Image 1: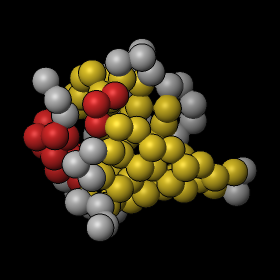
Image 2: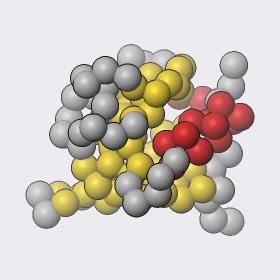
Image 3: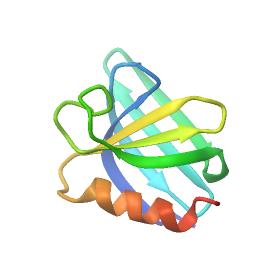
Image 4: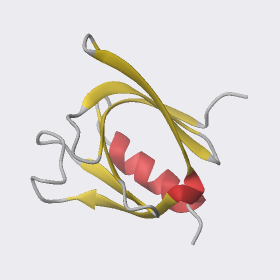
Length: 103
């Protein structure tokens, strides 16, 4: 079965530079794939890993000048996600995660 939602995104883990890729969201996980000429990445996070989700408002939390969804994980790591190509993608993703994140 395919993902419930699939979006082109820019994303960053911790303070790493943002990289382009695709985010596939299912009821149980987030799967990031993609990268650049400098390398590719393939990362999966369980929805149960997410402690908090919010829209980043400060320049330090945003990717570029785009609306950015910030996910704080239970282990202290932070993921930042901004949509590309689709206006409203970050809001759609945030609404989806609020429905499936435990708590």
